Amino acid sequence: DAGVIQSPRHEVTEMGQEVTLRCKPISGHDYLFWYRQTMMRGLELLIYFNNNVPIDDSGMPEDRFSAKMPNASFSTLKIQPSEPRDSAVYFCASKRTGGAEQYFGPGTRLTVT
Amino acid sequence: QKEVEQNSGPLSVPEGAIASLNCTYSDRGSQSFFWYRQYSGKSPELIMFIYSNGDKEDGRFTAQLNKASQYVSLLIRDSQPSDSATYLCAGGGGGNKLTFGTGTQLKVEL
Image (cartoon, rainbow over all chains, first blue to last red; front, side, top):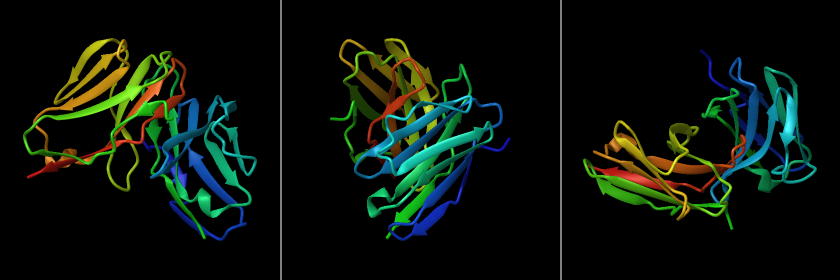
């Protein structure tokens, strides 16, 4: 079975540009999580969805960040406009109801210059 | 202050020794705890989770939870060079939201 799929794997962009990160969760999983990882702050939860509905977005740093899940097999995290401090690895993870484990995708390494 | 605290390390142990990784948490509402392993440049993967006070063993790994002291640990017996990675401790409040520590880097030396 395919795991969580993320694209792109690497993104380099200039400050002020819009960035869109994409995620396809594992089929049958009804929870989807977006995390950001930096050396200083570690792995931080940004937002999570259940059955395509945002449940908790308290970790979204500011209005420049937005996330959508239009259907059970696709989610996006958008940053507009991007800033150098957004540089990090962004992970998407999914899990099924009743399951303990969150399965992480390979991550997107974002560099904003 | 992060709700889950870990020593960043690196923790160096010789091959074959026991590695002891520790984690403290501040939220008494946390009910479940997870240990994830992350190799450099890779994504986290679950090693173990624990809900109840006491020990839980799985192969070479033992997770320990002490809710009174708000303390979680992971023991790795017979450490191997392939265990060299960063170990992330995470706490959950009963829902699906996890709070991660910043991780402890483990180095197993030949």
